[in-house]
Length: 333
Image 1 (cartoon, rainbow, N blue to C red):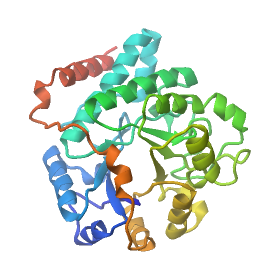
Image 2: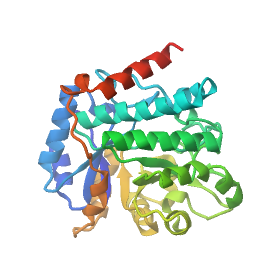
Image 3: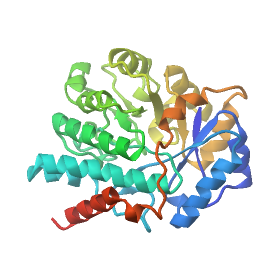
């Protein structure tokens, strides 16, 4: 199945056509799709009305530099700032992570979306793409924060997506622009990077997003289209039965698979349930690559928002207000 990116603030005529295709199961939104809360709600409603089947509407609303919706939304601190609060009090910092998750999820759901691809379970060890998006450099610390964050999401009615499996934080290259090669052996990756993912899966995470990183000591291809990482490690050894997403196939590190059609085929054949085609320029080729047939859309049903927030109700939600106050206080520590 496909999760596609849109061009602007409204659904174009061409995009309405893409939403008719049986392989298109959802949409991912970016800052380019956002002008205001009202416009965003109208866009989500139009996406749903334009498709003959339910659409999973998604975003990356992590906080810090990866916050697509800003005007009218709470200013979300980056995960590194929450992790740093553990130096003062780990229990308080874990509670803050839970509040961050709840507040973020409540606002995203109130805007008409289902899912923010969160939390980042990578280690903060210098990767140019991850940076302060990670809670900490220490595996056990990240694991504790991931468990708290998953709990906060679930309380808000949002599914949790762990990313980027099996770990994007310990290699320097940014996969948006370059190939990323992690030369470590499997034993080291298991002892470090996989620790937060194991914890998140045990806490009930519903989905996993794969990394566009290659681990040549383990498997020849990048993890996103690696049968070893998806089938052998994630599904068999870790027992994961939820939804597996590719990372964006428009990123430079995905080009090793070939053109758009080849990228999609390799990710799906390796075991991904849904492929993200985020750049609008990729979408026509991505849709054309998919056969017109029935797709297992019910696989994504557990990822749909399980609660119904509205922006009018949020100011009366004590949990939402407390979360906002706690996050605001962090800015002034």
